[in-house]
Amino acid sequence: MHQQPIDKPQAAARHSDAQAGFVRLLDGRIAEHLSQLSPAPARLIEAARDAMSSGKRLRPYLLHLVAGGNADRNAVLDMAVALEMVHTASLIVDDLPSMDNAMMRRGRPTTHAAFGEATAILTAIGLLNHAISLANSLPDVGAVQRNALVAILSGVMGWQGLVAGQELDLHGFSDADGVQGGALERITRINALKTGALLCAAVEAGAILGGRADEERSLLRRFGEDLGQAFQIADDLADLLADSASIGKDIGKDGNKETYLAVFGVDEAFRRCRALLASADEVLVRVGLDPDPFRGMIDAIFNPMLDRASRPVPWSGAAS
Ligand code: GRG
Image (cartoon, rainbow, N blue to C red; front, top):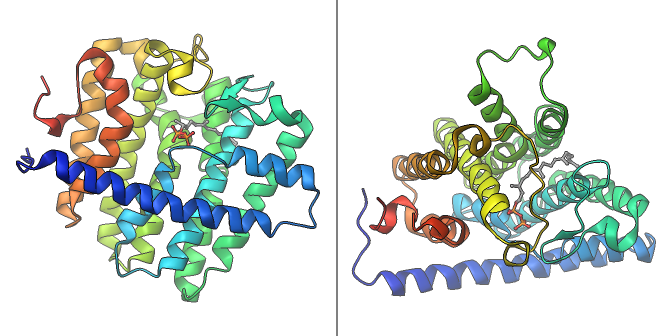
């Protein structure tokens, strides 16, 4: 396993500054796009602004890291905004009374709690629509790349992505869905669709904008898949172990759902989460990406959850 250099705190600070710098740029670009929505109804724009106003910006930052320094900066930013719009739309829908019926998200009232259910649905539809139009008009990107990016975005939000994952999460599999195997296969499939797909979309979009070869793009897909599975397990752990205030959203929403945590227990969930993160980490090294900024980002997201049981991420040197 990779050993951190002696000046680890300095390196961590540098990465977290870089991430904060990117997020500032991204937030500026989000505000710019939302300010151009007028003459759409002001209340609808306000709901979109409110829903988009925070979040860890994990998917945009992943895109940015994978795309690297040679990619067109404006195209990366616009595609990052598009990904965050799709993600935010999915959270708005997930929180609706007919789904999770959640009242708090990102440390503030959910969109339907603040603006009503009808406006929340319209906001989500508007954000999805805007995301596609952003990807379709990326500056300085060739037609082949642009078409691939639009296909990634429309695929991830639909029948092969979030929509499918949510339906299965809510209502389970039917015989006609033809999933072979048991609980592990069902859980893995749902997590891949509802969480992994958007992370894969982010890294694949980064690979395209960074001009990476197809083999690297498919290797990076594996990174997204592993990260997605790990992320969903950690999210389920947070739902069980964290308090609502510390994670800024309602907890206890998993109920009787068939999650990795529910089926295999807390210890195994931590073990699996760490193993998946280690596997994702290997991909970065294989495609020649500097793993440190990714590690910094992953540390910041996972450690607050995994630290709860004193089981930090694998490369921190303290893993059991
Ligand atoms: C409207 C595209 C669309 C889809 C509808 C509702 C739905 C289908 C899908 C939602 C699936 C879902 C909520 C998956 C959970 C993903 C997840 C772990 C979200 C939390 O991501 P963070 O922690 O959130 O990155 P922040 O708030 O930091 O951005």
